[in-house]
Length: 373
Ligand SMILES: *Cc1c(COP(=O)(O)O)cnc(C)c1O
Image (cartoon, rainbow, N blue to C red; front, side):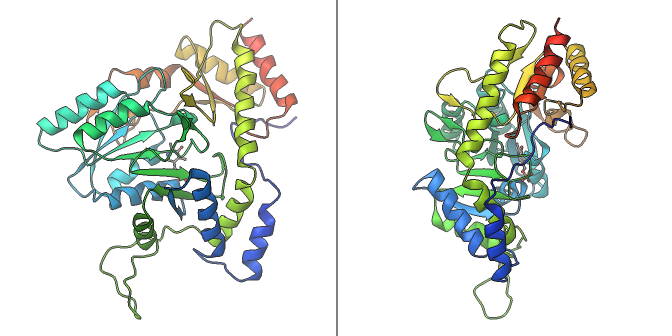
């Protein structure tokens, strides 16, 4: 009986064929045929008006979207506080100031009321935010209609951090296609992996090409190396894209498998009154359930349960610690009512990988039933 992990990568078996193709053709560099093919696969998945640039991480995709929006030193960018630090770090790469906004309790994502309060207050202080980074945390779509209505009213573009939400939809439309930009991550623990990788989704071919220009050192159109803009080394490698091509073949199975895990947890917790399983509030929200999360009655119960799982060699993890409470970010403005703090204090992520076996589920069930008896 081995350790049960939160979320591990799982091979489809098709990866090796594309990696071998890259090796045999000696395309062992950034960019190349696998990268182009992977972009086409993603564009087909997201639909007609989607143009996808494959990059070396989700973090670099967020960074490039800020650059493409012209975010500079002295600018302010609003960011959902309850997220992984990679959502917020690129704001600092640009020398801009992050403005953190709390979550609301229904989707755990950026709160419409506090978003509007933040925008109004920043405008009053003389610095209208240049962008909003909203996150589909744990695969759950944020309140798209409300958030985008507010952003539109003030003319502020949204960067949709869809790193955890490949396959999630809102009212039948893919997460990642609502904002000015959508970003994906193909890190090892995400829905599909390229070992490390990410993508930037936009609705214009020109924007995609500009993103690739920046991602490949901003080389001007000249015979010698000439640069009129600062460049980055952010393109996806041709080997990594080969892994992605193998992975995307089983994307639907992976989403189904994550959603099946969710049904397992729903059944398990249906009779346990002390546990609130995080779920979509209505049919508009279609979550891939990248990770299943629960809320306990107190932080003590959460810590005790984490320890009980640990004793059984099962990995669980607290909810993301809000950015406005992180040592590197705590001096920046925050607008909210401490909802994200509460989720952090009382919440726990449970094993949710696509390779969770029935035997694993029995072990998880046993810990839960013993703990709450
Ligand atoms: C994983 C993740 C990222 C960053 O993606 P990388 O590919 O690891 O750089 C950004 N935002 C969120 C919410 C994530 O979970």
